[in-house]
Structure formats: C-alpha cells, structure tokens
Image (spheres, one colour):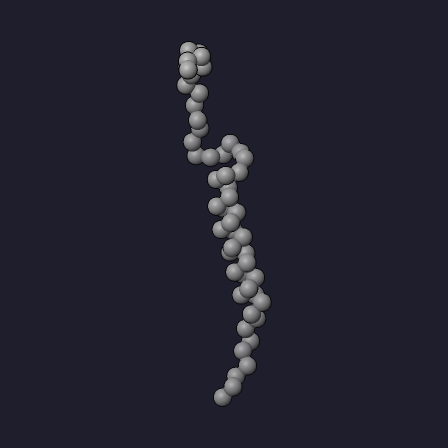
Length: 53
C-alpha cells in the first residue's frame, strides 16, 4: 500500500524560511534605529551635571 502523497514539500520549506525571517526581523527591531521603542530616555541634566567630573 504505497500511496503517493499530494503534499508539496517545498511549501513546508518556504514556511520555515519565512518563519525564521520573521523571528530574525522581530529580534533585530530592538537594536535598529527609530524612536518607536516603548520608553524614552529623558534628559535629566540640570547644567551642573554636564560639568561635574
């Protein structure tokens, strides 16, 4: 009973490649440029802090 499969294996490989691309893209977003990150660094210097040490 050897039944030939109708499955397209290159589609599975394409899905794996796209998943890896999405994971790499989302991991790299934290290190890329842009001001969209969830917090902002506030400049708290009062003038004297710039000249100390």
